[in-house]
Amino acid sequence: MAGGGSVLFVGNAQGYTHADLTPATNYYYKIWTVNGANEYSAGVSTLEGTFCEEIIFPLEEGFNAKDISSCWSIDTIAKVDGEAENEPATITQVKSGTSPDATPNEGTHMIQFNSVANADGNIMRLTSPQFSTVGESEINVSFAWHRDTQWPQWVDFMTLQWSTDGLNWSDGPTYNRYHTVTGWTQQSYDLPASALEQENVQVGFLFTSKYGFNCYLDKVKIGPPAAATLVGDIELSPITIYPNPSNGLFKIKAEGQFEKMTIKVRNLSGKLVYSEESINNKEFNIDLSEQAKGLYFLELRYNDKVFNEKLILK
Image 1: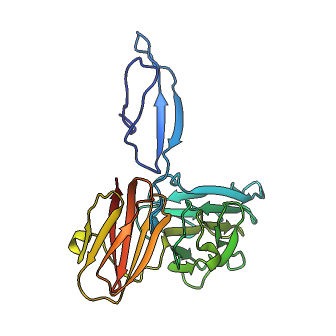
Image 2: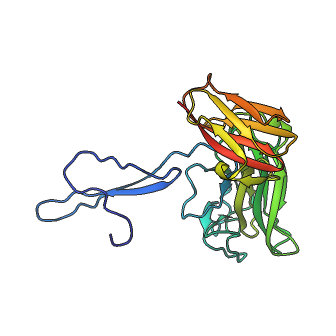
């Protein structure tokens, strides 16, 4: 239809079900009535978002859309109106930015905090979806952060935070906008031990305006350190899993030489339901008979490689 969009339904039904939607996506709807003279009403519009998918590491977000994913949230922590020329503080996804000039580190969009326009003292937080760190020995947060050489006396900044309940936040490092060199940098931070073995962890990017220049963030990745080589297709690896689907007992056979294999199984919510280390044992069993029927995710690590597979418990 003109201006974009698609016609979903034409008729006189009192309801309509829009199915097969993409997770974590915003949808804009408008409905009109029409009479026998083909005259249309002004219509009613609404915006709705779909639920997030269950988080399986790594959690990656490139912010490559017009609107921020419904899985991420934005909160105003401190509001300062300032002078008449100041604008309200906002966190948005943009294709490019000015003050300073910047384009996305990757993809089509990036996060912009408009600290060039909102008053000194405004604070906003961009918050990730919840994820589980149960069974993880390390969780790393990496992201692209833009720096520039302007206004060293008004240094806008972002503080990396984390929370286990969404209410109480702990501060990590602070990243200044101002630097002696303009451009994107790759930043990385390991969450502390107190953020591990937790069911509902979130990472926050807390932006603080000093009324200097805009702040830009892009390419966020959260998960275990990527030290191993990922082999996506288990059929191409020296690993055999059978039967799959299974009533609860999965047999695994490994070929080749290795000293230690680490086995982890997670449910759809990312919770660790099985963990074991096998020493010089090429055949072993995974017993999920006490778990609910459904889909599980298997991770095998050995010889600096990671093998992933889906397990179906019937």
